[in-house]
Length: 240
Ligand code: UDP
Image (cartoon, rainbow, N blue to C red):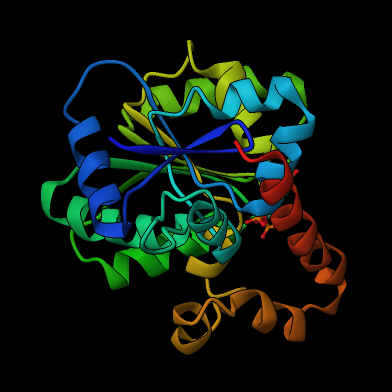
């Protein structure tokens, strides 16, 4: 797979359906595969935190979530064609595993949200096999029990929705104990699947304006959005 190195983070140059196909292949292989989908904010964080950068770069598939990362790849002369957000990849994977019967476990978000996401997924993706759920608000002493629950469920695919960088760190810390084939860190996706948070309408996503839509809905994100030009400037100045 061709990659573009953005401030030390190696991003795969793949689109949404290619990513879903790769994950389906991972489900047939031995060992745990990690899938991360950082946005520009997370890449900036990795740029400043080498340990986090190492955890991110252990990904077997790492896609560009956010228009900032897509622009950065263009600035570096290795253009990624489209954004491959975790939520969109997850939807494509759900379509496929609803047919194959691969077992899915939903981990993360506030109590009750993963269960609601499960109910919605069962309606929207008939045939989907969801073997367990757990919320994302736990103490470190609870982790062995959560891992046992995931392993005992026989899950092959695990959605880890704790937000970045917590989810990437959690996967890195527990990779050797997990028996799943694929662990995907996909942030706030369970909130969207559960219908708690609305995704930006397609127009905004298509035109790279999702950040603008989210800013209108959640003005407290202003600080996060303001980080975008800084990210672009750092990519320009520091290159890869
Ligand atoms: N979350 C969690 N445990 C925590 C903190 C956050 O499960 O200790 C969940 C939170 O409920 C939300 C998700 O992680 O569902 C983070 O969503 P957000 O949209 O903020 O993250 P992003 O997708 O931007 O990484």
